[in-house]
Image (cartoon, rainbow, N blue to C red; front, side, top):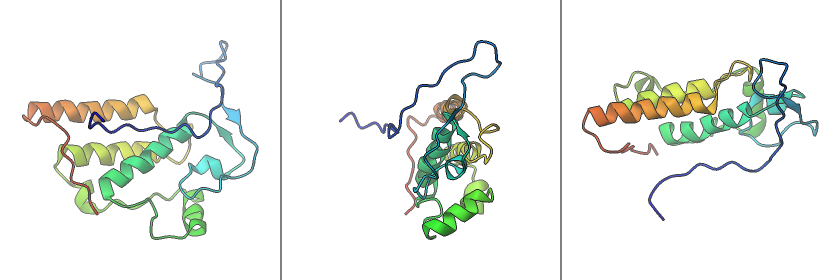
Length: 155
């Protein structure tokens, strides 16, 4: 209605408890229902591993990847092939032209996607870190006299 994009990912919800005797922000939880059948899940969702909010950060990387590249991550591959690559720590390809782009939006999106796609969830950045990358890009654009993130979708 208002012309603004909004991201939403509320397919699962789990209470995240906080341990006051630990330095960790939240206590990771074990979701023991077997591997995720989805092609675009975070690597930890294909293992019997602890999970936390970082799997949503990985999923946000998939959305940002599509905005940047104009195609699904591993879009040309069958699910089994994509999952095998993810398990080995492989990431979807980002073309050199985007990696070396001088465009503020391209640079911010490449950086954000890379931060989202860190294989080990313990090392993956937070959603707030990703937001700060995008807000920094917005400020740079303002300084350049651009009023919005006028992105050209690559299709």
